[in-house]
Image (cartoon, rainbow, N blue to C red; front, side):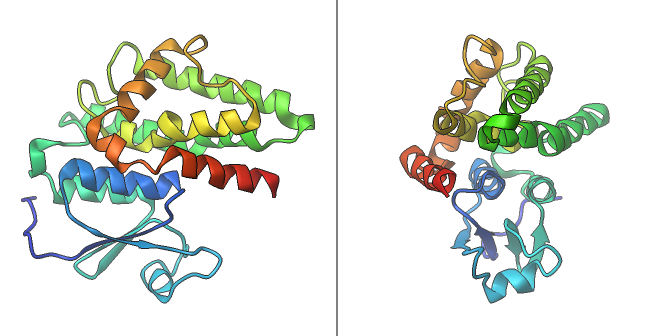
Length: 224
């Protein structure tokens, strides 16, 4: 599909502290696509959110020329297909097998790895040891897939890297609040190195929410 025209409507309905919402910000910035952003109050959902995502009523939602797409991984693939000439930055490889693998790892991130880490950071004392064990196992699985590559996408940021924004950025904040050591250079040297390459990539760095504000947001959530 050809690159879209300049006079189009691209809008994101999101939540600034959500890694799922942030994936869309990062993808559009990597593609060089201008867009309008609408911050959603999930305790008081806007009419637009209810209109554009009536099924799940969740963020993120991408609105492109009046058409809405929900679910962050679905949106990422849509962005990659629509703006496939911008900066020649493809998120998915050309080879069908490697495309399928990338989709598999994105799904594994959302279904297995992210929940394990989230549970470890928010678990009570009773369930913490088992939750931490599962989180470390999940991070090992991810590091084994990274191998010696700079990014999951090879030399450039790909679909799995964008989907792993939670690992690259949010984990260091949450583990600090929880007093845990999950993703460290000692435990997971390759994955830790990836996280540093990732958050210091100029486009990613610009697209991530401020660390101090994110820390304060989750610290307040932890107290609740």
